[in-house]
Length: 422
Image (cartoon, rainbow, N blue to C red; front, side):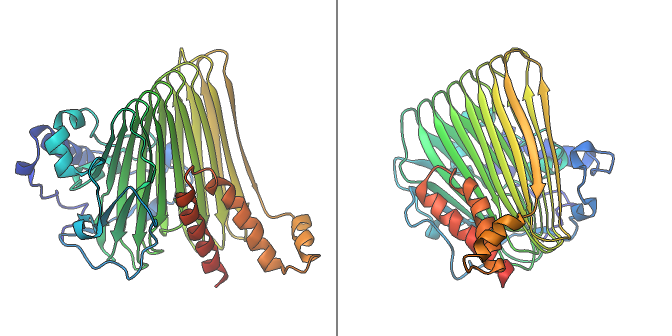
């Protein structure tokens, strides 16, 4: 095992193109050069920087046994399973006609195309050092290419299993949808309670008039730490939906930058986080409008138990010339204890005319009137609280956009609430 912080990765650069080998070497040099975040960094405001101590984790050389049972989709167009970063062909299925590739396969068949996009997942939201670490350790990835005009009816499913208290994994998903293509992708990060570190990334590139729905479900163990960086790019008239469900990890930080690069493009960003115990969930977003007549919508909801903490910092940025922008941002926090803490920092930066932009945040407890309504009908207070909180979360679940994925996420949300009652 190798410490991810103290030792340089051991690369097999003879098996990859020179440009990719160079990108990993440069990424390691960038990671080594950049300092750790400090209290003076606005991008880390309110974060507990002590949780950034990543010593003791290692880039595992071998896979481990999968858990006895996995919550998987009953039907999927394709499924790729990874254990501690190692692809499990026997547990995966990839029918012909759908380009769902591993990194080695994609580099061999689409190397020139990947050279332009397979880069350090830089969001500009504060974690450049850790994004570079991720790219330097990248050993495998899922590359999905949907050709022009092709519509995939069933979701594509990606499963990453993290096991072992010192295991470190670096999952990457790259999705390219060509003109008027359509696909839904569910990515699950699953793990046991004893620990582990996951630093992952997703690059979503939606071509002209295409539709891409991506859902990330974090169900890592309570003893683990996780970071995830998403870069989202929507071309002319493209529709791109990024849904995030944080139901695990003792500490989680997510960053998502949405680039509306084409006129008429549409980006939607939805999230539910259920924080309990001493958990901290830190979420940073950027809705970046680069072209006129583009639309973005963001709804992030947090439910907090015990002494948990959540952080949300979101910015709507309208660049010069992006006239006719229509953008919305809302963060809502539901507090279910006296000791939890929710921090929200929505923002606007507008450099164009004739735009409609709004942002806001609300934080509060369940109103006594709502609880009284349930109690007056014979429903105990604890059960009433759960029903209201589940309904609060389900509003976002219903926006995922695919019934089968929504059903799986809904079950995961219910299970997370049940854990708190137990």
